[in-house]
Length: 426
Image 1 (cartoon, rainbow, N blue to C red):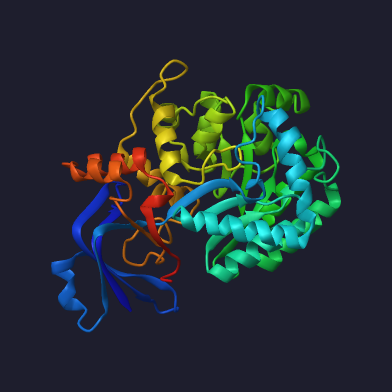
Image 2 (cartoon, rainbow, N blue to C red):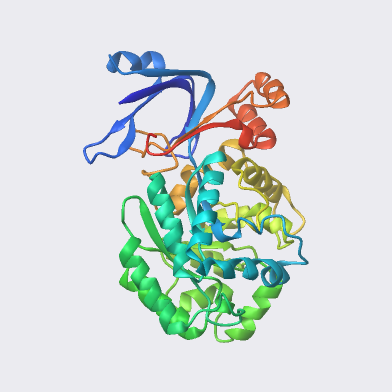
């Protein structure tokens, strides 16, 4: 068992942030041997309950839950920052050529190592991640995540049409490979599998039908895809699936809307789409830096809330422009404020932070496990330095309340703020 003395940030059941200026976090094994939060709260109130436990003094620092990234492409690590005229040319000119290299075990393993180093450097402790259409890409990611003890979810991309050689897969073999990967990896240690159609236009009806059958057969695996990101893509989906009520409806028609189904973007929705998300328990991975970079549009937070639709935040690297949760939270604030195409609102600093930690975990069905620092949560956390840069130190020293402190970190923070990332207590 070990304890840490520092300022502490965590979240109450009502999503509000809880802050201890002089806190104590105690971590240790539970009955199953998992490293979990054993106690958290005021240092003075807790310290006498743990005589003899070593306490690391981190006063001046902030301990917070590890960040949860709901949508990221590890094979696009080298695509970040690629110039393009929009989503579809960006896929054609950059993404697909890079992804075609992931049939090679050594290449996939090297990128996976760099990718997980980068997540840790930015304080991300759990991610729902796209691999490529190659089983080797999935195995490389799971093997590296397992070695690091991560809570991590990924899956083989399904794309049997409208895709170039090198990434296009075979319908029947893709479904055989997916089931084999589920059986090999899902539920092993802290790993989970996601059935992963790239997006409806690049899967045949037969492939989507097979994916839905696997989703029914394995109800505790995740589903991940993209929907309603870009108007050209929405029009294309309507041409390919004329019987569907909407682009989102395509996934529903094939049994791919349920709890643990995560759809990136969800921008160009109508009220019926949002109601369908809420009714089925499917959730959105809001990817604001990617949406701004590719000019896709603005996620409508107010309409999602009114519909009772679940969502959390995501980097969407490599369409997204940063691995940093601080950059993602700031972009989400700016997207929320936009009021020309939708109702504008100001997401509070605590709400932004919740959406990238406990809220993202809740959307993934992992609440109570990751994304928070309440007793029983897995011991994944970050140590933040609010004085990491001269400007940040100047700004945080003037904070008169928690909102001002958190917002200063959101606006001015980057990987330099992350002093340490702790995974399962290590």
